Length: 413
Image (tube, rainbow, N blue to C red):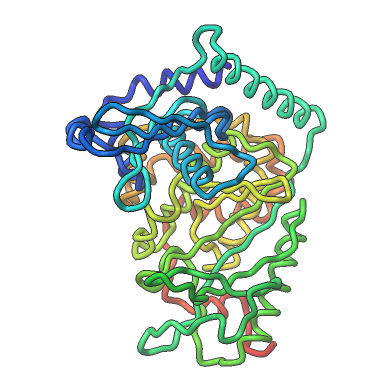
């Protein structure tokens, strides 16, 4: 409960303008009061979404006409409808962007097929109403799981699915990965939708997970080798990063299991990994945000864990990839001891989305000092330390480079 109250205090310190700016920077549509008035006469579809511990505990749909008629119904999670998932995801993202893990978000369906935020209630705990009791029950269940995890001193299991592109030079023409790779397997292709049509231009590595960074990286090399055997055209350049080719953003998703998803863990990953990595990123990759790579972006997975989706593809070099894996493991293991939150500051939050490296760079030394002081640091130091040194130097990577040279990969090997 203390963590929830801390989030509410941080939220109240933000001005109305700062809240709206944060949401828009994260790619969230906000409906102003004047825009709401313009829509009064027509049929409106609204959702009241109650979020606790980064998941919906109740979603109410309200259909209202200009004549005042109202139809209200509760959406069913078990039905697993696309509407439920989309509305839940947007409400969670809205609260998280404003520093909250609990609260009520009111949304209105917009003309582009999405939803816009109308209002946020950051403090739904008050009173002894049915809803307040539901919030408390959700929080207590979450705390029970967290306490169990801490008592067992679990080591997080990590996985990944970083992406890269195949590019024909000198014309910088993207060659679809589906020409060489199947959709499944440790080296496969991933889809994007262009003009309503699903295509598979992106290559993706899916190494087996592990609790040990060294073993996970060994699995990554096997996935690279599998990709190399399948991609027979040695004239193609392999590119990674945030957006090495305009219009095709790449991700470096990290998978976690054996560790409970919390707002604290997401904020530690954002501040101690995503923020420093943004300093190293090639400026051309900043166009990936806000559609992709927003802070705290996650997806729950069928295996019981979650996928952290904020990072760009870290295959740009072995040093970066090894360091990202090690730091992700270290942060997940000791995140409750990482207290700095520079991204809570409006200026730093804006700098992340706008790619202002100097504003972010000022916080890197103290963030790195915190990581080195963690009890579990020696477990991950071998791979974490070289990347942490790069963070402090602030040199950016080059997304135009052929990553095969850095990874010592030859076609058909």
